[in-house]
Every structure is written in C-alpha cells, then in structure tokens.
Image (cartoon, rainbow, N blue to C red):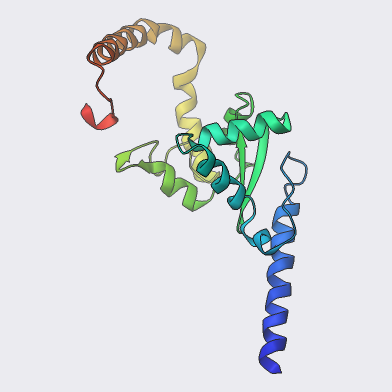
Length: 185
C-alpha cells in the first residue's frame, strides 16, 4: 500500500510540474497536447509523425509548418519538461540575445552555443551567450566604443573588402558544387 501511495503521489507531482512548466508559455501560440499517456512527451509524437510522413524535412521546415498552421511568428513546442520557444521574427531575436535583465541565459545554452559540431561558434564567454551578470555589463561597456557610428564609418571600407573576398570564395565553391563547412577554411 505504501508503494502504491508513493507511486501515485509521484505521478501527481510530475503531472503538476509539467502543467506548471507548460502553463508558463500559454501566451505564445502552440498546438494543444492531448491528455493521454503521450501528454508526458508533449509535442514529440507529432514531430515524429511529421518526420515519418516526409523524412526529407528538416526540423526548421517542421517548425515553419507549425507557424503557418497557427498563423504565428513564434511557437512553443513542449518536449517532456522542456519548452522550446521558436521564432522566425527577426525583430525579437536581437532582443533575446542582448537584453540581460529579462532574458537570462542558462549555462547550458552558453556551453551548447560555444561549440557547434566541434567547431568554435560564438564562444563560451562572449556577449551573446553570457548569462547577463555584471561581468556581461563590463564586457559590453568595453565593446561599446567599437560600435559607434563614427568608428563603423572608418572601418566600412575594410569590412566591404573582406565581405567581397568571402563572396568570391563562396562563388568558387558554389561553381564546384562541393559541400562547404566551416572546417574547410
């Protein structure tokens, strides 16, 4: 009897926790999750079904389908205890990456974005992925003078030359029809 009470109370606690986690994002568009045994998995069964129906689709294409069906720029996908907020709105993304007071970044985000497929990405301790502490503010103050209009105007020629060289390299790679990764260079 004690084990069944413990199991039942654990079951109720997990359900309440999932309900609480998913309710935090109720203001963002999302498909309802049917109340069944699949409720624990969230939207994962639907994502798997969509992949099974058309295996060539990428996750980004599936998210785009969700956005079209819900007629929303941002959607929430619940997968077990994680809520993924996915957006294609370019006005939201810079705010998410730079507003340190409202959108604190977790350490796991910093670690995952720092290295992508074994290649250094945006760095472990860069301005984009820093969790938004006083250290972030100090780094930002150091970098601010580099992004003033007058400084950017003086460096514009150099940036354009580098961008033109990059485009030439990419055009040559496209002519050869080779796949291109960041490890090639």
